[in-house]
Length: 424
Image (cartoon, rainbow, N blue to C red):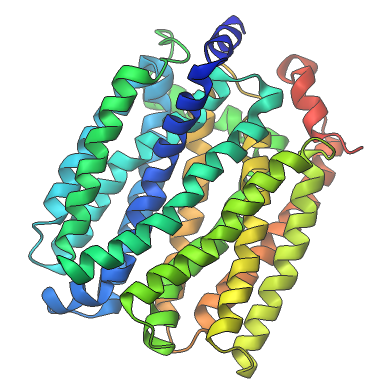
């Protein structure tokens, strides 16, 4: 594995900060595309002569596109290197964003959001694969925590900026701004981002080898345990994203700008704990942190659902528990991502795509479920959040037992990866 070592050497010094920043921005393009247009839901519904519930389907179509598309980009990233597929995805995202600004019906917007997602998912897959390429495996969890700092800024900036754009210029300018951001990202990738692992001409793009490659990744107990744990836990976040516009703007009657600030305040929990995770990793193993964070998230989600059901929570109570829920997520995502990818070097693109596809597929289901169960209360959102947290904890407990029973072959497990999953 000489390539990752050489790449990691390129990240030392002043270039380290800029590479982390670019990878973080690439990782954030998906969440930014989701969060930024949430405050514009009422205006979009009015302008396109539809309902907020129908506009929410454009969020679901985005999740579907970003789920399916990642499976396409994984083999491409391994076959052609990281940058060429990344250029393709960014250009598709830019064009689709500009087209969304010109949509004249909600049906067209839903379709265009699907294509926008197909572009954005290239950024997500490439960023995770490049973390595995450019940094030693034992540093991956800390690097993902640093990426979370950039990713988590998007829920602070995006809805606030989107609220002001929607109120001041109209919702169309939200998508124009996203197209402009994509152009800046394209320039940054071209001029400042290393290639990572070189193209593998032996990687076949025929269906059978691709499916076999995905299966070889998926069947590893360490991969599927932490991939599903992280994905299901993250789905609670997507349920919050899908349900919060209705809960705060419709039930609690906050304005678009107020909703943007609420979303930003709640996201501070994600930012703070993602950085706390880097400190905790100096003392504790990733597996230990995940378990404690999931227990705390489950308790928080149960209290949030119970309080909503009994009518005990007002606006500030709901904000507080959502804040605590996202705090836990800040410690779950970096560690589950690092442990999922730890075993894979040569086929990091395929592993990253499978990881992202699982995350977004379950996230799309959770967000659609919130819309489907809409009964004009906060219960669909809070109920799905509670189910996700409890299910993720169950998967972790059962999966780690299976990992202990089925130790992977030594040839496939690096010494660093083994150390990451051992409990002290």
